[in-house]
Length: 338
Image (cartoon, rainbow, N blue to C red; front, side, top):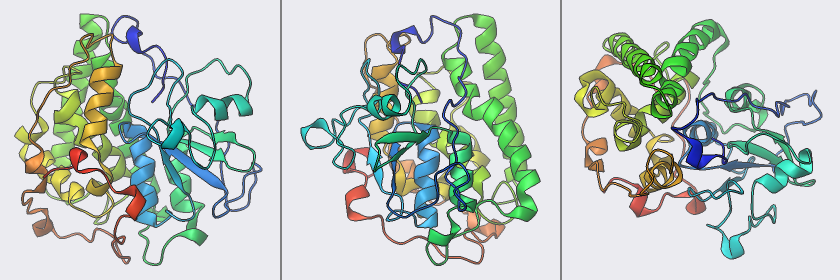
């Protein structure tokens, strides 16, 4: 999620730009960035669904120590994501005030937006990658030597073709579809995006009516990518983005599926509804010029029984659940269901 042109949303045609920095951090270091514990810093916003994929994946795989994380303020200014949640407004490891500084060290006067997730090389302070599509796949497949004992296989080789197909549909119509609807500047564009979104959600509900997870009987990357949109749906996309044919809580299957994931260690314990709501409603001044953040919805429903376990399935396959959230990474009470 980028940090520029906030007031333009809703006034100009929306098009998601491709990641510009696509170097990969791999086991063999073929791009010059070998997997190395402690060398890199993952910069995220808990508000951003694209960054939240990496937060969930990192936690499920137990990479907290190997890949330390920096959390940006959910409220950006014209200089992009900033570290104003940290003492003195600087990231304590990188020593920078704005993520754009790491981009500048990689490419001076880079013309594109500054987005998260971003991985920064700590020794040089340079951006390595902002490729949100590839990053989590590499965490699952290239960082295996540093995975925790019992880490799940989130991108199993035998299922990759099916996972890729599901993720492509989810990306086009759901992950990016909510933005195409919310940032549409013409009625026709909005209606097309909104229609495709709810058609896809209905197809996903049919798929999930008889199986606990999207692909196979265990959690995969596909579930992570759908979850990060669903968890934001009623809080921001339904109202702020006008995706309001129905609420997630009104769809029996998807609401139960989302609650099942939310209550699974590694998913809901990474979600900060306070960051999510303040970011969308206060940053997107082009479509919410008052900056008023709504009080609702009531978050208590996320903790209610879902009964999805009756469908069977093994969340972590042959592995185990991640341990407790590290002390310094716990979401503040304001961002969690009571």
